[in-house]
Length: 220
Ligand code: ADP
Image: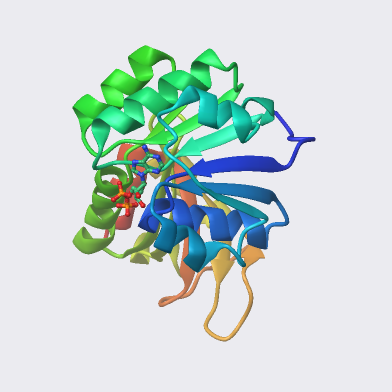
């Protein structure tokens, strides 16, 4: 998988999404250029980010002056102004930025960005809504869907997985899921093996096809 030799990213739009993202990247040691048209917002974050600029990023000349075309990664964190989101994404594509991420506020908005050629489109509200639905309906404590239709879930262990070594309970052959980790109250997470005996109340991390994982967490 790609590694980024160039740990610099331009974040355009420092609203709730862009600002959280920029701060997390800073925490991980990346250099962040934060751009927003709102002077007050830029002032607020100017001492938290490596560089900041007040600018209308829809203007390709301005983006060029800020050197954004030299970045390997850029994030467009503008949702509500769809026109600006599209214009800026298209300018970044035109400038040849190789890794462009953009946030969309609706599926249609996301579709347009994908058709433009934006490399990664995220729908924070839709994706978070789906994730939270998984948490609300059952025992799941955390849910991540990755690849097509595979999920990794943190859940309170259902009874079928407890009381016997995992190898004997045949969780994988019966339910199509793999227990990868286990956490007992007051202990750290450890990797699960065929010999691991899960107890009632233990928290486990399980992976498998999304449907299989969902069904497994709903077992008694
Ligand atoms: P969030 O929901 O994450 O707060 P918004 O879409 O509401 O996202 O925020 C977008 C941010 O992007 C705002 O701070 C706004 O000032 C900024 N913005 C909008 N249009 C432009 C533009 N053309 N150039 C630079 N910044 C912009």
